[in-house]
Length: 98
Image (cartoon, rainbow, N blue to C red; front, side, top):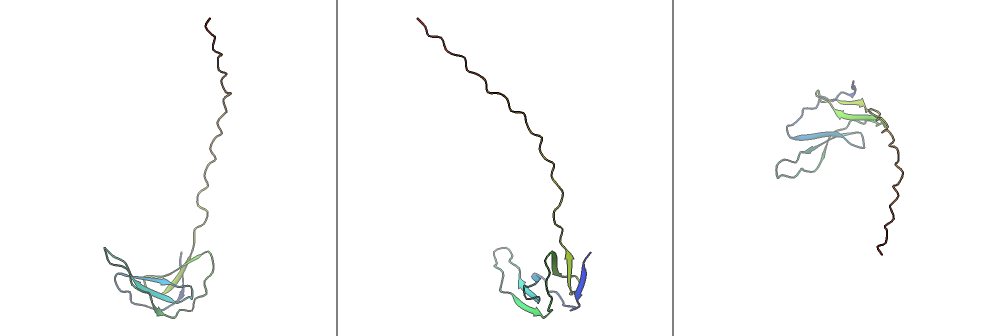
């Protein structure tokens, strides 16, 4: 479950990508769509969030900065059964014709 860090109440604009930058502030950039390139990002709000490793930071549906614990590790894979090695077959010697 995500926890809210900063209440900003930002109104989202359609076709815009919102993210929390390295500086801890909220940034917005136009999304690339069918033949159009994305635009330059602009700072939208000063959130002043200090990021910790192991968490995903995002702008939630209410326009507030939130974070969620990242899933790490996943499901363990089973080890494959080892195959028995077969002994190499000896080649039969060819007889010379006289």
